[in-house]
Length: 474
Image (tube, rainbow, N blue to C red):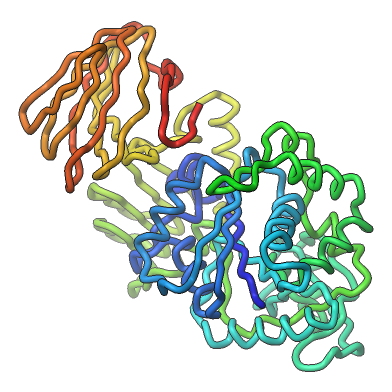
């Protein structure tokens, strides 16, 4: 029984300003209109499993669920979710997933670990590699997928295969795992033909992984088990106990288990693969013109060579430049030398250090009930466009330091305003003074679109007291 397990975490800081903490890399929409998360789901579904388990942060649950709902997924595939209260890297996440699958399907179930932010187009080649990995997993191996290197890449860890120790089919025993190398070391690895890029994809039986986890990392294993025992497993979706999970070390599955396990195999991935780890990688999905320029969006490039330009909603023009990355979003613009694509994460760290909101949020922010977009803000005011999905509602809440004026643009809005409950249509409005409990709901069958005008001496998103919430937010 094969159970794909999709891991979704991490901010994808090298893809800022499109990837941000609140809307990270797996949800980036590629030129073909699908996100990496959706592509991963469909790739897992192509294996025809009964169930697909997704492990993600609780803050990403609703956006993940909505992204999945947009795909043409077979109705007979069940979607299960396991929510982390905080990030603790891949070892605790995979172990918690194994415990979830053991409870439901037993130790003999086979887990296929798939990061949510990889791009693979050759589904037939991927399926063949998975089949080889499953055969080795049935023999008790913990299997990793190695990608045949196409160059001396310094951004990946490597796996050295023991080519003299064939395991049948495409599999080989793993001699060792090695860290991200220097350029010189990477060239040495490439020349030997024994090394593969570490893809971060794995395949093993639930019981075999948990046994090796307990042997190789007993302290971490015990803490994960403690967290699982403290978790309310009857709830849907299952959310891991926050207090217990926070005590677990931040450690990858490579460090905790794979580098120390007794039976580890590697299956070469004879398929196209990219982790879309930088703007350089993402730009390669766009066709180049005669001058080597790649453009997504509206742009005019004059006397420019080997540039990548992505613009969401306005014209970008370049003149007499070469080898530039230009990524334009409504609230942030990135301009960088293409050779420095891997260093974009340094910008994000600088923003975080300064407490800048653009490291975490876009101008359009996704919420379980819909979205809001900041249209304009200044001293003592902020204007938002709010879209509430049919049947959804915001929390019952109040604010200490701001008042709000809501104007319905389209659809219908059911509003709680203090002691009153009213239903408004287009061109109708309601004023909510500071300190007044209020709620906005959409009782209709189409989106409710509203304009919200905030006024007050403090307009931060943390000035909110939730009295009741359908989505479990505090």
